[in-house]
Image 1: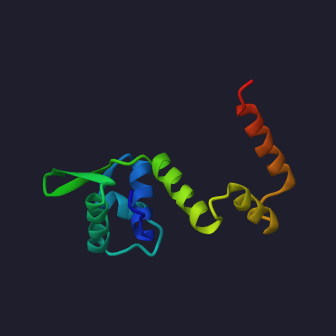
Image 2: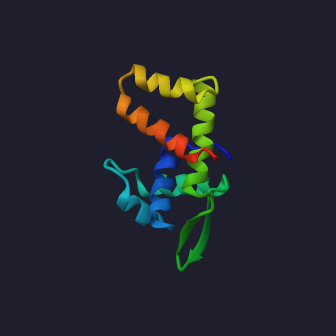
Length: 121
């Protein structure tokens, strides 16, 4: 799975929310300042080339449907992110956020409870 650029990821976020749509649908939901229509259309065609969406011609335009689920992309992205920046250690990732005071002790305890509840008996 090829990594997405920021504009591609923003377009995919909208397409995932809509479960597909036209370029104009995506354009309407992107934050201001929005890219020009032609730029967004090129971005979405790149997503199609990369295998993230499939375009179906309807009249004079194309409706794009996601081929990759958001969860699948998130899992792959997080895995490579942890590998690239935290030596493939989720412990280092959590430690980083704790040191930066981005996660509280209560939140860490909640994470521990979640992990313990998933353990097989």
